[in-house]
Length: 255
Length: 248
Image (tube, rainbow over all chains, first blue to last red; front, side, top):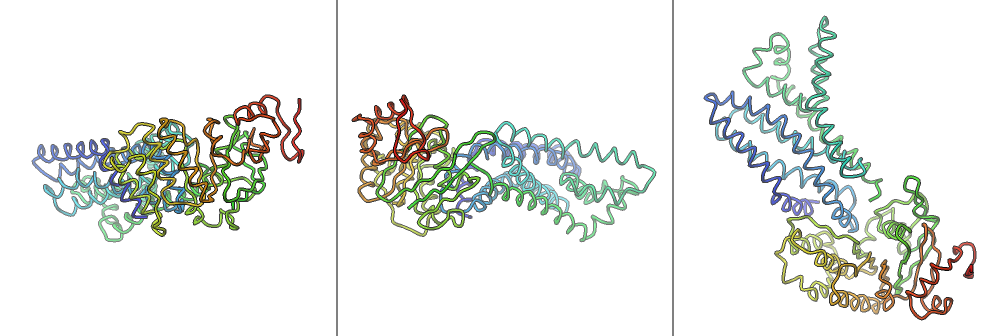
């Protein structure tokens, strides 16, 4: 399996879109660290950009790449390898190349300017989100019949996770504002990897002190090692479950 | 060698394959002929395991193909459209394919050399012309000296010289007693190669006979004329009659 991923990785690392993505992340991170006096403030701004851009690029790039290598994937499948292997190698290839781009674009500046627990948490969450949204993009592309629908589905899912979900959450908060909702919101945020990443990272920073009682409840949970394990576990589930569904429907698919 | 039993396949409302029953044996060069959308590619893809039939079985050397994937080791496939990752070089592509089939090491690099692909191993795939990509696909199909060769429109897009090289190669492999399945619309190309002709229409086998029998039935001496004769006058599908009846 690694043999195939290696060649997919070779190919994508020379891809212009991935190079541009790396350069963009690098420029944004460097300028944020240069402009802000306080590097932990810069990490907070960087966090907001990472949470929007990383899922978007991971999803759109993976979907387009999938359709562009459709004929090639077909040829792979006429070789003595199983469909599962081909799919997982493609995933490993795309996931690792996008992760490499993120590590160079964001990881490197963070290590240089703000190497502490918060910085490391940002890098880990960014890498996990890359894999989560690559996995979701794979599922969306396998389920959709053609390229236009595939990219449409990817964009819609991104909208949902980045914007619509938060709106729904706010709606719940307002409608039931008479009740204590902290625990429920905590559970609900697990249904959105972006939110989970945001809450987890915010609570590693000093800003959580501004969030009042809710902040204290979250800090209690996410500050502990159980919170760390919980976040990691949910993120991994967000990678594995879409991939499992993708493999299952790919096995039945006509190419 | 390959036995196709009662294969049915429906895409949405379109019935792409209707109860196909055929047997392919070693030493045959079978031409799959038929109008666009008659099910040629679907049949080939079913044999390769890319399309999963709704019902029926395909048996390769006595083993059903949905049980294992190892049978593909004995197939060389040349797709109709060869698209490869943009930034991969020809050399990397060949290395990768060799890696994927690591178990058997007997390689046949004749086409690889005669198409002069060895002189451009560092060229990335995105810069290649359609014809060169077609040469790459052909060289890959023959690379592993497989017992069965499946060629989907092999000569489309090749220049006359390359087309001639490929045809000679196919004749050579035929001499080694391999099974070769070819689809093509260029009947003059098939004429020199083929031993049997299979004519598909609307997902059903209309005709599957040795080429000599086809000539005899139609009274024509050329494949293109014989096929034109059938397309013009039509014939009843095989399951209706063992003997071919020509409806005038």
